[in-house]
Length: 492
Image (cartoon, rainbow, N blue to C red):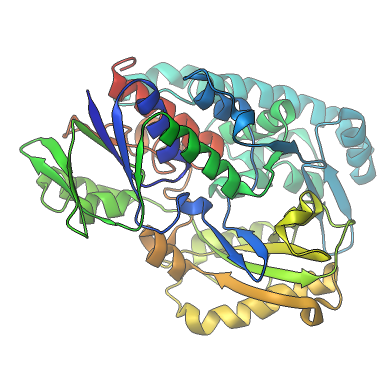
């Protein structure tokens, strides 16, 4: 393979393009939006820098590897700084729990909730270590193209009771309900319901314990910029503001890609980092096998959407950490409303991002940048008019942040805007406005997820949240490694 086109410049697309270009494949990235990054887009408004997300960076070694492929150093393009605590978890009764990999601090935090759970937590950590080895180290960047590969992995997955949910597994180790929430909420960061997502995802705990939680100085957008700089330095080409109109096929082969402006590239292979349904239904509308695949994908369960309020405030808050989870009064019931019932509930849980506590330069002097993220049902379950619902939910979210943390929040707002499920559809062609593609259920994992190489079109590949292993930065960077192996012929 001499030439390749990657559609979409999200983390998965960028990581794959860097791998291909590093291996001497002449690679072009085609991006619909005016800036690279996909879901890691950013805005600069009134002197404030707002990252769209993802804002929790873990497994930095998986990113560093992208630079080392060509003898470069990530530190020359991106400055990663550690975040501590990883998260502060806060409940409506005022309880705080600082989540960290400092064992002494963590044990003291657990003791505050229930000293009887310290021993159970130690057993959970052992369990997490085991699933991390089996699920991430061994399988995180391996493509599952046939059922036999799944069968081979099954004994290890069964040993760790992969059929159980993360919440159920955590509950078998610890008794305190707040601690159960603290050790199971992570699946929400990759679009999964803790009550249904396979216990294998408990590996995220070990991933954070070992590798820490990091922040790219200047915001996630600086990590994107660093990856683009590396890709272009290697000779790769990035074309912005030109959405792909079609992936062109002849028989069972991809021949090239045509954009909406009429720009056309012939190539030996195409990899799509675009939304799965958009890729199969819209970009491959001329392929009969793609239409069949789109039909079967449509029947799968997609992860929820998000409602994100970005706001810049007058003042600084050294007491509000970089990452906070503000739990609502309900956990199981709220998750059922979002994932099953398609209800926009009166209550909610929020992830609060406060980057200026780590990097004040992301706001004008004496000001702060925040966003509050609220999981909401996708548009297939809750087909709302977000132009009407959005302003109401935005005010309720800001009121809640005010009630719990910043009493005069409304008087301090300099600039604000919200990003809604309808924006995910409009900007990212996200099916149903889903923020994380396919829901990470056991029945939609590995072989049961979209394959890294199409079953019927042998030079068509996929990368990103919808393929194995799934969403989140380590997931999509792992998918890039698996897909690159297939494209370069270094793995089956």
